Image (cartoon, rainbow over all chains, first blue to last red; front, side, top):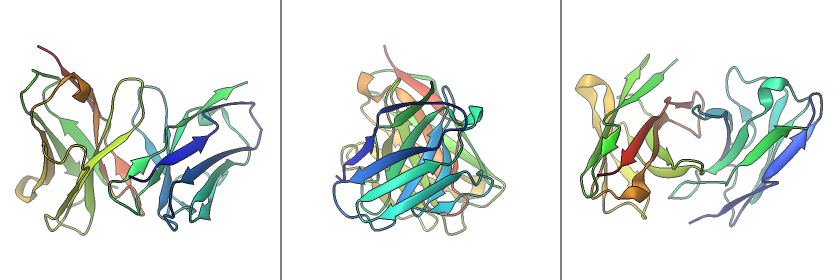
Length: 107
Length: 117
């Protein structure tokens, strides 16, 4: 299975901060990577697919980049609604796999 | 916009078969899409279970493959998950989803299934 490793596992930040979450795949997945946001007790929500394509309705402060094995999710200016857990997800190889999650907390 | 809604028993006995359905509204499951099941044990991360294409072709996680069946019910516009010989380790929130790697990807709200006698 492809291992997806996110860093950091926990991130403390303030409203207005620019934050970056990284995701590394154990082998190349080209651009076949999605990012999902999950709030406590809620279902995940797709933010980004194909490494950098923003899902409809997702604010433009979210952006994704990368290819091959190294990817980033950037939030340009944190808003109160953004404090959540973020998961990367590769769908190049079967079985699809997810990162362990990055919990974004209020500082 | 497609919406998905899981349903099924919230409690399953050990060694029994877990059966869930995902009702799709706002779109047809017969269109070219992947229909997916993912689970999340309490307090843990996400695990991909498998998927079915609109044609009926399937892919499963090898860790579950011998116990899993995912199928389409085109007449009722839904798809299903069956997981046999369950144990406490199968206790999780089960999500259905559509096209998580393509435009208009969507998740259902999830349903908690507890395996206990």
